[in-house]
Length: 609
Image (tube, rainbow, N blue to C red):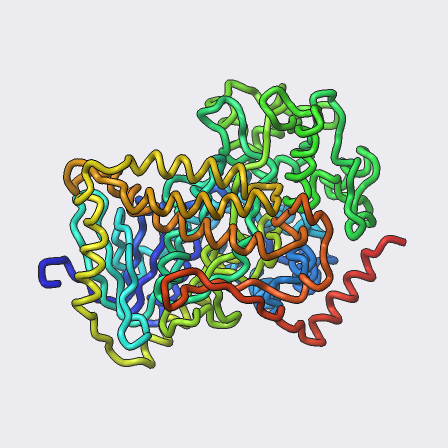
């Protein structure tokens, strides 16, 4: 171990997106020594892809909103498989976290009287998303970074963690390598916060960038933590699909929140065809009413384009399957039509959606103020992740915490748009707070040199197989297989086939080789990522086979309806003694009587008359 660079911290945060930065800020503010590790450069986080806004019941646009309505919306969107305590804390604390961000310098869009402006988003009953044009996530990262650098946090950029180190069952540190030179590093610490984001690179079409290979979920799983709700993967309904070089890049839900409509190749607004029963009383049945809603009419109902993401994605998929899709296998998203409604609409669109205007102009040579965008579903977010305590965010492993997309519980079967940004603020803060408390209360740890040596040996194995298979080929084959067999619409036989394919891919991954040396070697990095991708892909597939119903982000063609019995359990996956994945059904968390009353009251307020 003396051959490796060693760092000592009280709390180590792995991942420097919104959740990781917020956790690091909170831990440092409590007086402990904090290290922050990021796989890429600081600021290169998927948080910047969350463009539409942060959901918080501030009531700035519609004073009927409250934390209770937000809580009920989140539970209903998650099909009641959410951890109710997390949904409660999130709804209650989100407004304060957004105001805190404003105090740190966030430049939110404003109402006419100077308050933070809030926009409509799918699944939210009232305008609730505090936003900065369509660049909210980018602004959030900017502010958190600027604030964080004054907290004395040690930042380790372009460093990848491959193993968590344990001391008698509790966290003792982490083993990592720097991506530039390939040198190994050992981090000694008393607590770790996993904030590594999602698993999107397990799929062929995704809005996620190269870093999102399920690292945090696999690190926690290998250390003895449990994974929860892994079957629930969110396919965002609107990603770019043409040209091929930009396929999967996110098109923010903010386009629909500002009045954008979905049309098939015949120019028909197909979303009016299929409105779920439990949303009918909230959803407009004519275009004029839907338009008034996007313009702030409190008496109007939302357009069907602002239903939950899982539903919108499946509707687009249906149009394509039945031959009514756009030329490249998607649908048309039209914001240009508002020229019929608003004088000076061209400048209005540029002001409200600057990133989308430039994105399509530069990448697809399309002017969205004149021409509809061609969009289709893209793998965007996983509701599942590390199973944590609702209050503290600590996993089953003492000293191991998780927050943001890497953690499970808040979103249940489906995440509402905008809840991700407020999620990472609320639970990033909580994870950092309780990780610091754990570090203060628990004594020093000892790093086991045998664990370090084993981690180093495992990391170098690809170099012993320089004649082995190309790791990029294995990753590409995995992505295509998951997209085809465990994608938006799932079937038993296809997923069982996927399990067989995963075994073959594991065998191939065990033989991949790294060519050259450790410096500047992305092939080696890809070889190491494969294990993480295979672990999360197996967990997703295993859980998806077990849940024989359709619910939220999990849709089964062979079981298209919800099953009342399946509504009563979550699926938990962990690493068995022999190394194989184990799974159990765990009774869904009981909803306390006071929270159940809130849900019932809100259901009555929106029931179909």
